[in-house]
Image (cartoon, rainbow, N blue to C red; front, side, top):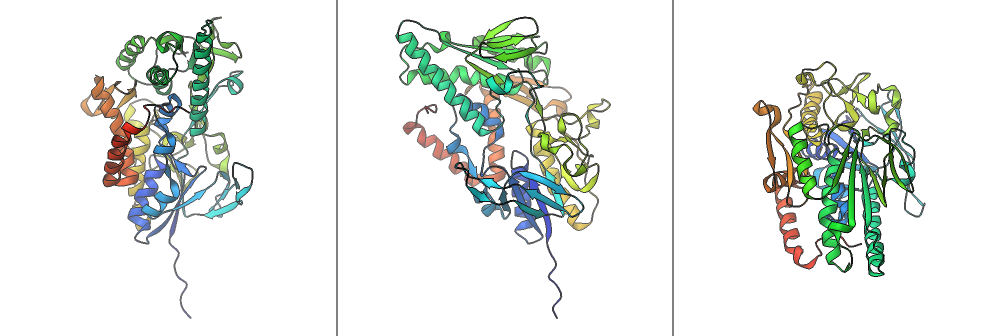
Length: 444
């Protein structure tokens, strides 16, 4: 009688974003292709789009249908499995992850409720907007959490511009009032993109709309300055650039209500708004709380050690925005690794080594965050940020076209991780050649 064939180590990764997808691709190439482990990636959507691009989708600069990549194709290329679905439960004792049923746009069942068995489970599900229970946010504001949100805002922006153009043609110009709540990177980048892309929109048939005068933008921030998570000199530089774009910035204004008339603040001010974007805070998804008895902290984050293992289960890991990871190098008691894409990328690289060590029965490496600086995009030809951060014992302020090129290179690095250098080169050449046959902005 033949001995039973040994099963491969099963690694299940939940979340195919900026950290999870590159991790699945690298583990598939290193372990899956050689038969050393079975890698499975789980995501609620069938296609991947780099989340930092959502503000460009919302403004209309980027077409998600062109930049999105199918998970099934990536799984085929990188020797991992893809399973679509949302997490419905976790049984840690049985090492089972439950996935909810999946339905198509017409409500027909595509995939039934399923169970995935794992030996190692890794959560990297990112973050969602935190509305802090402010009344009216759900009904009157849009948060750029997922692609559908960005596309919905873009459609509303186009419709508002068309209405304003028609009203101006009839002799009663009203313009478009846009209020962005929150002056973090998302809010600042979105405002700058809207200023640039609406000018391009107007050139495609909006004869009576003057974007510089008729499209009025206000950023409302509760903190004393914009970009509160970044250094003060980066915030000052960004403030100056926003002023040049004629974007009104109101700091020290805490929003208390959003209704059909606009945005209301604690100071008694009211900002009239045709479109409202909520970008004032983030948290990990609510469903992580009490999932399988794992420990969660502030903002629903899974509490992990410096090995990125959850505190209550050494077989369950978490990283990125959904994980509360200690940051001892910060020099502050209780400091946590900041929720940035660069942190998720560094943690994904560490977990590749961790999974190899785990299969070999070796000690796991520990995570040490290296702050490489931060960049904030302010349109197609400009950005601002700090370079290298702690690596040079301080920070170097950069802005303008060079900063924008560096910002764009971050996306190229992400593409390289999932498409390879040849794929990225061909993709870049193809987009360059198609510029003559496509509009500068998305017009629908």
